[in-house]
Amino acid sequence: MPSTSTPTESPVTETAPVPPTTRADLRDWVSEIARVTKPERIQWVDGSLGERQELIAEMIASKTLIPLDGELRPNSFLARSNPDDVARVEGRTYICSRSERDAGPTNNWVDPDEMRSTLSGLFAESMRGRTLYVIPFLMGPVGSPVTRVGVEITDSPYVVVSMGMMTRMGRVALDVIEDGAPWVKAVHTVGAPLAQGEKDVPWPCNETKYISHFPEDREIWSFGSAYGGNALLGKKSFALRIASAMARDEGWLAEHMMLVRITSPEGQVAHIAAAFPSACGKTNFAMMQPTLPGWQVETLGDDIVWMWIDENGLLRALNPEAGFFGVAPGTSDATNPVAIQTLWGNTIFTNVALTDDGDVWWEGLTKEKPAHLTDWTGQGWTPESKTPAAHPNSRFTVAIDQCPTAASEWADPRGVVVDAIVFGGRRSDTMPLVTEARSWTHGVYLGATMASERTAAAEGTLGELRRDPFAMAPFTGYNVGDHWAHWLSIGERLRVSGRFPRIFHVNWFRRDDEGRFMWPGFGDNIRVVKWMMDRMRGEIGGVDSPVGTLPKLGDLDLRDLDMDVSAASEILSVDANEIERDARDVQTLLTLVGDTVPPALWTENSATIDLCR
Ligand code: GTP
Ligand code: SPV
Ligand code: MN
Image 1: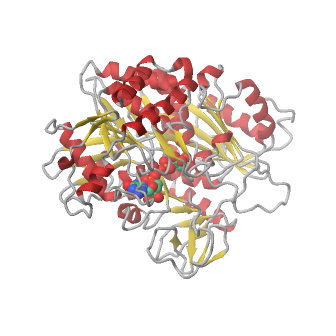
Image 2: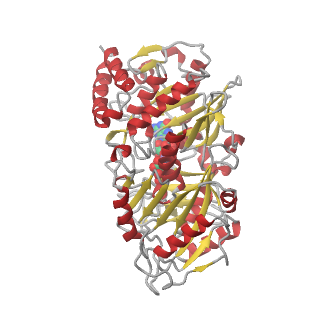
Image 3: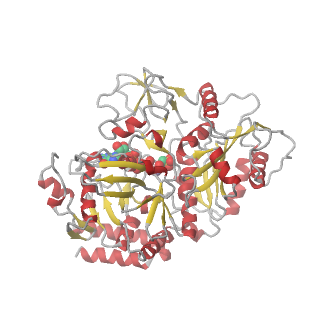
């Protein structure tokens, strides 16, 4: 990247006397970024406990982290972001492929040369007065055929400590780089250089934000935000946007999915991957405590799944992450007790409320609201307050190995064989509790056309229904129609073994006329999973509908549930008029995507409409 200033003008100190790598490409890149961004010093991150403790001490001193009570929440911290930096900024997220067609109509596209020129202006001297941290990290366990390496440069210690929980960070990744692995470049700055002697703020960031991806160069540049997926670049930027482009080129899949192992009381085992949009229930599904006796759910991942076809033609999957960055509001002993146990300590909370005794609180954590809190903006709060105590997109960051239901295989380099794929969104109406796709192609159609009401996970109008293909609308690093074609091509390759995962669509969020959820959700979702597993064993039939096969009323296990037959038939009902209207609305998306839509998906759309007649 060009810079007008001379490299000698500001000597940068490095913590290590020499960079701890022999790879010239890595050393040169770090020098080049330092030359442009002009940090005060450079620190190569090794991932050690001592390093983490030092960073945390610094962040306590700068008020970036507030230590929580050592008894109530050991080794845990609260971070309060700038109130304008609270979620992913989809409007400022760019896919800068060489051709606009490759970004497709659902991504923001800017010509790569133009974007690089904009970024070189923004990044120039952007790290003045700060430390440039070099974070080598792995996405995936050591030794897996799908594991990939990245190096994130950042000037945020909050990002370093978070990446230490979300990925395998430091020496372990540097060793893989030393062995010659290619690595993805990710550059991040909060965009808040400090003048000589200027006092820092607890959450530095910039009003201007750019989350830019160069899929052909496998490169990420993020400016101005320190929040979640905007800044922890291993997550959405690498493991979804860049990895999806790699996966298209190399014949695998990088998807916005959770991954679990289910065991029935009889010992039937299934691995299920589910794609739900942001804040639509992946973490909750991943940690489900089944309400049916004898059932077991083990957690493999809660947000991202990489899948590939193995030498026997089986679809295998693993979670490339090592931590959870989970939605706090709504998490409680009633809804997700496993998450509550996971968060006992060693957790960073961002934008939740602080209790008077130094613990955390968020809407939904307890039935009764505390009499007094400090809200996520640092103001006093009481139950009479008109604003929420925790931000609706407040989150916890914690390592997976703290999760009591983590399957021992969560870090197995071979991954697990996928038995079922589930799509679903947050829809008040139209879509029934569950259906099974008629075929792989119909399943791809259900994934491509899924819709969901908007949540607080990203900026935008809350509750507005939008199409969110494969729950990947903000995360596919290439043309969405090509993504659908890629899914169909995976189906073609599975034909060789004939071992297709079954495909289902669920909707936990249908509402009645009074606006109440019709389905109890959470641990009771096991009842839907049980039906899926009965279907996988091939023992039960179903009812054909335009959106796939529905359960026969008697086949859904409703024992001990406060739900009568008419309520159950209501949530399983499919109204042909509503489905036809929805299928016609899908045509708006198909038309927008245009000539990259695989013709088979138009055929599925026509078939859906025909079945409504
Ligand atoms: P991201 O991390 O943003 O990708 O989201 P996620 O899909 O992991 O979302 P998560 O599981 O954290 O759920 C977000 C919200 O949905 C929480 O407030 C949950 O309480 C709520 N939720 C999850 N499962 C259910 C369910 O079965 N029924 C109902 N009604 N709400 C649910
Ligand atoms: C999502 O929004 O889907 C998340 C949170 O999982 S973030 O990492 O911020 O994208
Ligand atoms: Mn997510």
